Structure formats: C-alpha cells, structure tokens
Image (cartoon, rainbow, N blue to C red; front, top):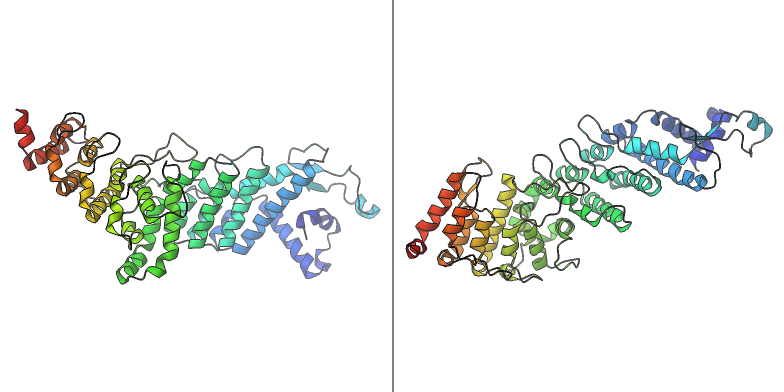
Length: 460
C-alpha cells in the first residue's frame, strides 16, 4: 500500500481511530513523515540512536515519494507552487461529491518537494560535520540500513536536476573523515564495507562520478589516517594472533576485502587490471600505494607467498622495489583536484620504509636490479626521491631509525662505487638534493663516504 497516495484521502476522512490496524499504522507513518519534513535532523537522530527500522521507513518513504512523483511530473500541467506542492483543488476529482467538497485544500506533493526533503534529511550535518551515514556507521548498523540510506542518495542523483556537490558516501566531516573511514575504523562488518564499495561502483557504472572516485579508499582524515590504516588498526590484534597461529582459513574474508580495497585504490594504474588478481600483481599494486598501505598488512597479505615474489616484474618490467621507492602515482582526492593525499606524514613514511625493508628481506638481490627505463640504481633513485641514511621514528619523531638509503646499501654495498646515469656518485647526488634539515644532508653524505671513500679519492 502506497502511503503517499493515501495521504489526501486520510486527511479528508480524519477517521484514523476507526480504521483497521494496518491502515492505522499507515496513518502513524504519515504523521511521523509530516513531522520529519519540518525537522532536518530527524533521520540523523534515528541513525545515531539505533532507530534502524524507523530510519528505513523514512528512507523508503522518500524513495517511493520521489519515484511516484517522477511518474506524474512528466504528465502534470499544473505549475509547482513555491512550497514545492501542486494544488489539485481545481483538477478533476475521482472522489464522490462529499469528499470533493472537503478536498479543496488538499495538496499533492511534487517531485521538487520530495527531492528537497530527501536532500535536507540525507545531507544534514551536525556541529562536527557528520551526516546520517556517518552517524549510522559509528554504531555498527545492519547492512539493510546502509542500503536504505544509499537508495535515497541514488534517487537524488537519478531524478534531481540540481545535484549535491558530493555523493553521500563521499561527504567528509570537519575532520576530513569520510563515512568509509568511519566504517573501517569502527568495525563495520565485512558485508557492510563490501556494500559501500559496491555503491561507489554503482555510481561509476552510471557515469554519475568519474572512475577515480575509487581512490576514496585512500583519503585520510586530518590526522593522516586512511581507511586502510583505520581498518588495520581496528583488526590488528585479531589478524596478528591468527597469523601467528597459522589459521589462514579464518582470514579469507579479510583478505578478499583488503584485496578489493587495494584494487580500488590502484585501478587507474597502467598495469594488468584483471580481477581477481594474483599475489604478485597484488604486491605491485600495494607498492604503488606504499605510503598509504599499512605495513602490518604485508605479513597478512603475503603470508603464503614465496620470497621469489619480490623478483616478479610488472608490465613495465619494473620490480616491486622500484615501485615502492617511486611511490608517487597517487591520484588527487576525488571531486577536488586541489586536494592531494598527504605523503609527508611520518606514519606514511614508516609504511613505505617498512615495505621496502620487507621486500629486501624477501630477496636482497633486487637492490642490484636497475630501473628498466633509465638504468638508474635503486640506491640513486631513492636518494633522488629524498630518502636519507636515517629516518624519523614514528613514535618520537627523532631521526635515528635506519632509513631507505642505509637499507639499500646493506643489500647492495657495491652500488656506492657506481656512477649514476647523471655521472655523479651517490654521495654527490645526496649533496645536491634539498632536505628539510641540513643535518640530514650532512649525515647522509658522511655515511655514504664513510662506507666507501674510494669514489671521493678517485675524484680528486
């Protein structure tokens, strides 16, 4: 039974108390909806206080109202009034004479009315910038509640001529946290997270957003925490304990989700794009987002992979180490090309450094393999990318941990004596790269010379 079609009749009859329970329930829904249209926070309060079924009713009513109004709007000839309704008092009535006399002031809600109220309910933001979708995901909603909110968003995009600035699943709070980051960080079910990724694909398939919207899975908040990092932080203890026990079968669903998230984040790359993807291809994709990929996930994702995976080349003949050192092929954040994903955060550098160290542990010989495009060694490339002999500690921020340059030297010490394609030795290159701290330049140059002074002696 469509509550929207009953609204004019029930208002005229005004005999709700005498109706059977099913119609009485319909009247209660209508009364709630009439209240909701005057309160933009109504849906937000429901989703933030476990009012799941009530929230679904509101969402279904909005979707049904939009769809029904869209069917009649194309044939309607009456102009919309200022309040978004269409006066039907002068139109032919199907009611009997008595009802017709009492229906002079009855109004039929228009498409504009439903779109306007769907937007006001779905895009309401509290003082912290949280939307109803944020609020729901903070308290672990059932998947059908997420579905209901997404259906309203779809209806707005499908029928509105004045689209919101962002899809509801991409709206950030004031701390830049997207609903997906909230979902990953608070333990939303695997099914719920997969449903979220499905929704992004739904919009892309209909050309409502660009394919690069998938990189949303990397968008961090203002503290530098990305959805991948948030998800790993929440599940770290469970995953780590099962890795130690070797209970791989219990981690299958986790593996499938992370693999899909990595695929989302790197689908724009010009490498094999098949899905599902092999472990070797997955490693290449992970190295392209080395700074955003939680280093704790490496052991989990490649638990059963052989060490030889470090020597598997991609379509451009590059090794995983090469891509991890580059680590600069991230697209701008979706919907705003002026915002870039932050690569300067210490935790992001820790992720990249740990990934490089892990790859070198699997097979140190890959540090001897030069880049196929220009013949530059991994050591010289790392120096050009601004890597140092020591790296900053994630815990203290002090510069005392082994950096990428030192790790590459330990894996291939003979590379210190080779000239780069530019004609410079590694220590010379380090002296030409601007660092944020002059002490870092002096330290890196000194360590390179200390461990192999022969190039300096030869240049005298």
